[in-house]
Length: 375
Image (cartoon, helix red, strand yellow):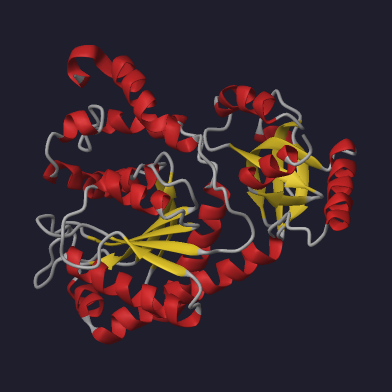
């Protein structure tokens, strides 16, 4: 189908398949109630193969350890696994499992492999278009799991994991959870490097099918290279797996604390309190304290020539969460901002929509909930 109808036809068909999932938003606010942990591969799909081990077994062992640690520390949190044994689960079903349980976070656990046995280190991914060829290769490798599925060309609307042009579709996706995904990715990467002392291969973006359907913040972690003999030993050792699981659990603890501390929850205890809350929200809306915009850059220190960040647009600055965020197309109307997204994306490929309330970032779902309560 791709060859016969060309890239244009392929994009049209896959847009119909991909985009609905990114129009969804989380319904719950405030408290993290559920986390979905995905052990990559499984069953007839071994994943990457080392000298003495399979990726599927390492991923499952670490995933179960992470879940157990989180459940022990937070008994009230529901921990969902995409698999708890050596079985094959289709890639498109993994995201659906998370969505069906209304999970607030999705973590997919994997290990990597390359021909060069000296390559090593840990990397954490969020969904997006790859910037580096190496990122594309990782995504191709992980997405190749669909070839174990029956009739995968129809099931994934002609998506071919081995063809670079298939990944163009990821540049058109608007991931409403990119900000939170980057936040948990940064914490996980930092804790893993700190705990294992392994080489830091940083946070990256790439088009992973396992992340495309999830309506929540989501990351994919590559714990190391099974093709590197030293790292393979570490990945299979009990102490190594415990260190990695502890690190991910610590990162989750930090993420949970931050999200719940900064969330806006509309839960008044009385009619009067409810009225007061809505009055305050109305005041903030009328004074322009809730708005949407398109973020084009962020930095830990101010950028002097911010006009150069997105030529042709007025670039504004916001200091929040210890970062300077630069945005354009500020408006109280989300639909208006959405309409301008593709135009801005021609200037800044990795831009995305943000919502700001009283000078602080909130997720799109929270902003929509605020507006809904005013109608």
